[in-house]
Length: 631
Image (cartoon, rainbow, N blue to C red):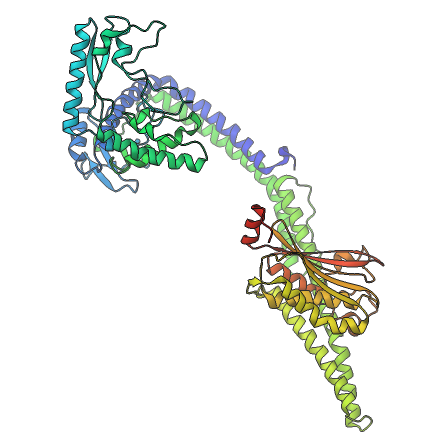
């Protein structure tokens, strides 16, 4: 279908033109009188929103629940003059600085406060992982550890000052005191005072994590004075436990990705940011940190920042601006109505044609067709309707033919039974054993036809059910062959059954025997004396193939598409006794279909015919095949 004829493309083009004119005109008019005020208001609003967001983010990073956040919200509201509301994802209130009479909250929150997924717009300095650095969780040091590290940092600063350098103590969010070098007294002091790299903090291929007081390496390694300025202890017991827990989570993720895990020495990093891996696998570290911190931070909450009392005063527009916007909107409305009327008129004509054809179809005219030159979706709809009409007409014809065939198939044995019974009643024939056997045979033919019709009725109604169970295919094929071997020997036909290996198959054994019995019976019926019928099975990839092949008369290529039609016979002149009921292959097709398989046929006249049933193998067969294990 050409894009330019597509209904969707035409409607979209019309909408784009109308919307473009409307947006362009409105935006140009509005920008002249409101752009300055809007920009100023947005700037102030973003700055205030960022301060509120950062304060609440810090609270969430340090508290596992939002229980005491109401005081924080009230204080922020007083300082910023905004109404601040926190709710859960289900909009259940957590804290609100407004009054009960305030207007309802907007549909979209101003932000989502989640210390494990920081909004980079409101907090541009957020790390690549998106985790707020104030969320320390199990890395929070004890009071004793903080005091020990603070004393060690103070000793380091004093040492640096004695050798002519200087530094200041910086406390990390988890309470660790570190020394930031502010001036170099002697070259080499920094190198000896602080390790160049966190020991075993990441795999060898990852870039080393720089500490705050590290400096670039120089070709000259000055010595001794800095050796006396030892940094605070590299890691505390609290940090080691937290790192071990994090390392377990990260390695589990890396193992699922099938990549090299971090060594156990990586747990000696003093900060989770020191736990690094290859860039393409860094998401495992971030995911592990989020899982580790989940119980230490407050759950994600929706943040609504509005004006007190729901005051949403819009930017004031002049009377001239409002007038221009009104006239522009009116012009856009007129254009829109005009274009819509034109498009609707072109669309209605082919739709009316389809409606008229549908009414004719409903009145019983199966030859109703839609004749239209429309293209695009409407043209496709018309073509689909015509195809449906043709299918209904064919189905109706098939129904009539089927009724006629059923009447013919029932009439012959009934006429025979009635004739012999009337002859017996009139004394013309004697009801002896051969006559009873003949009448019984005719009755069995009727019963077989009724059974076949019942199976087809169940299949048409979708009620032909199967009860799958593990099937020993070799035994099932042998049962089918044994049931037909006496007939094969009487006809002088060799009948064999072979299975390659022992394929795993789940199927309804009764229905599968019925399908194979139909195929074997059909093959014996069309194979002359001295011929051969072979039933064989094997597994190919994720399918089990069952083939019934014969060396019979074969089927013409023109007739192959009709072999599964009801009441179809290879030789039109053959009756029920010579050609079967004409329903066996149709039933077999339905039986294979309800098993989730398919059936194919290939034939050469004078050479033979092979029917192939494809059934899905059970999972165990596929698994063993994938591992290269023979069944």
